[in-house]
Amino acid sequence: MSIYILGIESSCDDTSAAITADSKVLANVVANQDVHKNFGGVVPELASRAHQQNIIPVIETAFNIAKIDKNQIQAIAFTNGPGLLGSLLVGTSFSKAFSLGLNIPMIEIDHMQAHIQAHFIEDNNKKPPEFPFLCLTVSGGHTQIVLVEDYFKMKIIGKTIDDAAGEAFDKAAKILGLAYPGGPLIDKLAKKGNPLAFKFPHPQMPDLDYSFSGLKTSLLYFVRDRLKENSNFIKENQEDICASIQATIVDVLMHKLKLASKQTGIKEIAIAGGVSANSGLRNALLAAKENLKWNVHIPNIEYTTDNAAMIAISGYYKYLKSDFVNQKIAPYPRMNPDKFL
Ligand code: KG4
Ligand code: ZN
Image (cartoon, rainbow, N blue to C red; front, side, top):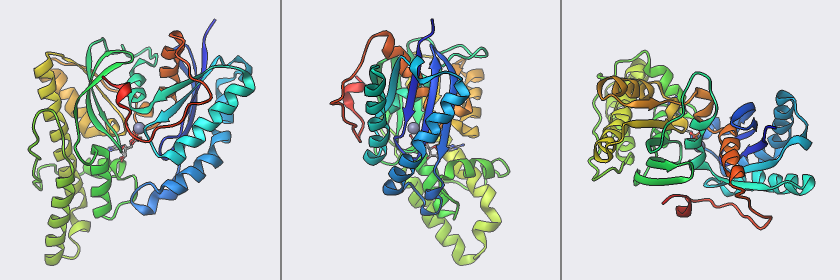
C-alpha cells in the first residue's frame, strides 16, 4: 500500500499544498501572491494575510486533483523554516490542527533541504542524483553550494555573505523598473539581448563564498550615468542590460561551482531553488556536462520555485524513519545550522 503524505509550504509568498503517494506526486497546487508586484519585494504582513486566505482553497484543490480522501493521508509534512515568521505560522498552525483532527503524525521540513530533496521526486524521464553530490541551491533568500552525502546529511561548503542570487535578479529588475519577482522577467528579456553588450564586475570572494551586493550597486551607478546622457537608455537597451546582468550572475555562480567540483572531485552536480529555473544557468550546466563530463541534475520547472511537492517528498523520506514532531514545534525564521552539518 502507498504512503500518502500531505505537504504544506508557506515560507515566503507562495501558498502550496501537495499530495504524494510514496515518491510520486499526485497533486502540487501553488497559489502565487500578486499583492507584492509593485513593491519590489515581499511585504511580510501582506504575505501572511494572503496565506491565511489561500491555504484552505489550495489544500481542497490538491485533494480534488489527487482524488483521494483526507482520511487516507498518513502524515502531514510542513515547512518549519527558514522563512517569514508570519507566513510560516499559517502552514505550521494548519498542520497542527490537521494532525490533531485526523490523529496522524506531523513532520517538520527545512525549506532549504526540501529544495534539494525535490530531485528525489519520481520521474520516469530522469534518474535521481547519486550520493555524494553537489547542489547549487539558489533562491530569493539563499545561495549555497551544498555537499549532499545522504537524504538528510548535508553540509554547506559555500554561501553568499550578503545578497542571494535571486535577490540580485530581483534588485536588478527593480532598478530597471520591472515588477517583482524580477528573475523570470530578466530571464525572458535576456533571451533577446546580447550578454556581451555591457560588462559588470565579478566579485572577488575567497574560497567557495559568493557576494552579490556589489553587482546591484554597479548596475545602479551604470544606469544612473547612462540616463544622464540619454533619458531613454533603459528602454532602448533593456534586453542587452538584462542579458549582460544574467550572464554575470550565471558566470559568478558557475565559477564557484566548478571550483567546488574540482576541490571535492565530485562530478555529480545538481541545481535547485527558484533561480534554477533560469535558462542561462540551465544552459551553463548543460555546457559543463559536455565540457567537464559532469553528471547534471536539473529540476523540472514546477519544482524550482517554491512548491509543496518538495515538502511532501522530504516528508516521505522522514516518514520512513518515523522522524515526527509534536504539537510544541515552533517555526524558525533563520537558517537552522542543526539541519546542516
Ligand atoms: O525558491 P524560491 O521560489 O523562493 C525562495 O525560497 O526564496 O525563489 C524565488 C527567487 C526569486 O528571487 C525569483 O526572482 C527567482 O527565484 N527566479 C528566477 C527565475 N525564476 C524565479 N531568477 C532567475 N530566472 C528565473 N527564470
Ligand atoms: Zn524556496
